Structures are given as C-alpha cells and as structure tokens.
Amino acid sequence: MNTDFFAAWIDEIAAAVRARRDHLTQLDAAIGDADHGANLDRGFTAVREALAGASPHTPGALLVLVGSTLIRKVGGASGPLYGTAFREMGKAFGEAAEVSPAELSTALDAALSGVRRLGAAAEGDKTMVDALAPAARALAQAVRDGLKAEEALEATAAAAEQGAEATIPLQARKGRASYLGPRSIGHEDPGAASTALLFGALRAAASR
Amino acid sequence: MKKLINGADSIVTDALRGIAAAHPALRVDLENRIVFRAGAPTPGKVGLVSGGGSGHEPLHGGFVGYGMLDAACPGEVFTSPVPDQIIEATKGVDGGAGVLHIVKNYTGDVLNFEMAAELGGDEGVEVATVLVDDDVAVQDSLFTAGRRGTGATLFVEKIAGALAETGAPLAEVARAAREVNERSRSFGVALSACTVPAAGKPTFELSDAEIELGIGIHGEPGRARAPMGEAREIVRTAMDAIHADLPLSGETLVMVNGMGGTPLIELYIVFAEVEAYLREKGATAARSLVGNYVTSLDMQGFSVTTCSLTGELTRLWDAPVETPALRWGR
Image (cartoon, rainbow over all chains, first blue to last red; front, side, top):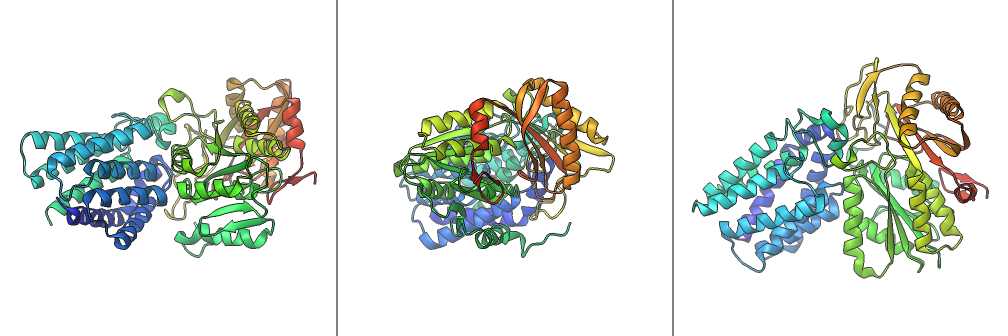
C-alpha cells in the first residue's frame, strides 16, 4: 500500500463522511450535542485542501498531515482523538514508501494506544474505541492468518462495523453521552459509527 | 425553528463581525477567531483566556474586558475551540506574568486546551489551568467524564479577573480561581430543547407536560425527565440537588441564568423562589445575577449557580468590571 493508496483512503473517507453527515449528526443528537457529522465533514474538507497543497510523498507524511489538520480544524473531542489516531499511524510508518498489512496492523495498534491514552477510554465505555479496538484485532488476526491485503481490510472493516453496532445496548461512561447515564442505552455511539465509516472507506480504497 | 442567520456555516464569523462592530473596547481577530481586549496584552498582568463552543452567548466573548477576561476563543456552535486558536490567544494576552486558562470540564474543551498547552509548550509562556466542574446533576462521576463546567465559569472568570487586575501573580490567580470552583455548584432545567443550526431541528422532543432535569449547556438531555410543575417545585428540585451536594449557608453569590429562550419575568420568579429557599436554609443571597449569561441557543429553561462567599471573594466580586455583558463599579 503506497502513498496513492492512502490518498485514495482519505478521498473515500471524505466522500463517506459527506454522505453520512446527517446520519452521524442525528446519532449525536440522541446522546450528544448534534455536531459530529458537521465537524468531521469540516475536518475532512480541510484535510483534502491540506493534502492538495502539500502533496506528501510517503504514507507516513500523508497520515501525519491528515492528523495535524484534523486537530487544527475540527475541535470538540473528535478533532484531537481522530487527529491523534492518524498522527500515530503516520509516525509508525516512518519513512517507508510502501507498507504491508503487517505494518498497517502495527500502526493501527499505535493509533489505538494514542486514542486510549488521550481519551482514557476502555472497550465497553461506548466510544470510538469500541470500533477501533476490534478493527485492530481483526487486522492483526488477518495478518497472522496470512490473508491478502484486500481480504484483511474486509475483515477489519467488518469488525469495526460490528463493534459500532455493539455499542447500542451499552451505557456510556466517557464523553458527553456519559451524562445521560442509563438513558444513553439504545443508541449507537456516533464516534464508533464514524470509526466504522473510516474502515469502510479503507475497504473501498482497497477494492478501487 | 426559524434562525436569523446568513447560513449555518458562517454563524460564528458573522457573529464575531457584529461583536467587533458593536464593541470598540474589543479587538476581534476574525481569522483566528479570538476576541481580545483592545489593549491586550497588559504588561505585568496575568492574562486570562477562556473559550468553548459558541451558542452560549454572552459567554465567553461578552466577558472580555477590564476586570475579567483578556481573550476568548469561540469554537463552532457547541464545539470546543481548536488548539491553534488557543495558542494564538495565549500568546496575544501574555504580558510577561503568565496566562491562566479557564476550561469547562467537557471532554472536547479539556482535550483541545491540553493539546494547545502541549503544542504551544515551546512558545515560552507560563500557563496554568483551572478546570471548572460545578454541575451537581452529574452523579457517579467515577463512571462518567466527570462533572460538567457550567454557570460557575462566569464566577471564576469574574473573580480571577479582578485578582489579576491587582497585579497578583499567576499562582495566586489560579488558587483563587480554583477556590471559586470548589465553592460553586450548579443545576440546570430545560423546558424545551434547543435547535443547533447545523442540525436544523430540536435536539430532543419534549412535550408541554414534561421538563428535563439536570441539563448541561449544550442542549443535551438531562439526567431525568419529570412532569412540568410550578416554578416553586422545579426550583426546589434544583436547590435540593445543590444543597445535598454542598450545604447552603452564610453569604452566597447566586446566579439565576436563562438558557436563551426564557423571559426575564420567569427568571425573576425563579429567583424569588431561590431566595426563599436560601433563607429557609439559613443562607442569604448576598450578591446576585439574574439574566442570560450562559445560554444554550434558543433553549427555554434556567440554571441556578451558587457560590459560598468569603470576605476576599466578595471583595473581588464587587471589584469594577467593564465588559459587554457585565459591568459595574467603574
């Protein structure tokens, strides 16, 4: 997977976020403050502009720029959290011109630890970690099983989607939804939903 | 819900243009979205920076001026500011004595101020942070993101601002700010949801017969839904929650704050009930504010914030202040 692949991923994310903007905002309206879709849309629009202006030459440089732009433009909790995730992935890639599924798996683990450190959230807290952690596990397993890149990313995306869906019956313990206590039960976490969207976009980029 | 806007995407910029035009004592940096005191920085004075999502006006831009904030960073509606904004504001108000960040305890606000402190660490400005978390509606805080910062933010900004104006060092200003927070408690009630412009419809549905108890300031639902009742009963519920958490006694600073869609006549009715409640507990409303100070767009409802006063805090509260939304004594 080279720089063009990751650029295609970001394009797929931007399109998916735009298409699902209202859906994400509605999920957020139920248990948060009704801005998640609008925030991510603003963030990835800024990311595309930043990438067009800088044309980074390695996957690592590209993802670090994506992360920094999200931190600078999104605000809220999702800016620093997603920004950190992309920055950690980019840093894990280093200077490599191309990365393997195994290296992507290592980078995803780094992203997960970055997000967990910053948000102090564990699995089951009803946050983006509930989609990110199963995705990271699924990719690691796919690498161990020797799956091809496309199959590995299919498994990763599926795990993220299942993880996001599994937040529905949970009671939130982090973020703004936590203030609702038991009333947060029965709603999909918007952060987990957008994380699933990101991995769906990764799958789409692989099948381009 | 109709909105008097040019478009959902330009709300914050358009409002900042208006603030700049209406208040010559302020300098608005439209590009970085910062509301400064026109003369910032003040040499030798601790700089005070606060910020948070827009939609809570007059918080925070309305509290920039003599005796209160040096700069405010408004984010998008209900979204915290971004680190770049906070860094620029911090640099812009440092008069050589350091800068105090006043941050409401919401995950997004905390993370972005932390990121700013981290990213701006090389700028050479000494920064202290006070986290405001006064909302007693948040129970079991070990299992949540902790208590929210709501109305007490205004008390912290006013009192820390007054102390900074005397030339007190950063550590002193931060200590007083934390003391105000520790002595303050809030509880909010919604009679209706608000409408976030980008979403275009109310955040939740509330029938005429229902209210939300224990709301924050972002239109999020509260900790429970209850039947609508008389002002007296609703105030009692709010005050009971505050009193149970930190018993009310002695001279108390009280704010009855409207959420943006409640007429003053109703807020005064609430204040009368709050004052009666305090007397019943042997406390007095020694200082008070009634009005829209920390709002949630067009939400109907109110919050009550109390702060148990000391001689020092009363003196600092009474000290002159000159901002768009709060001014006296000068």
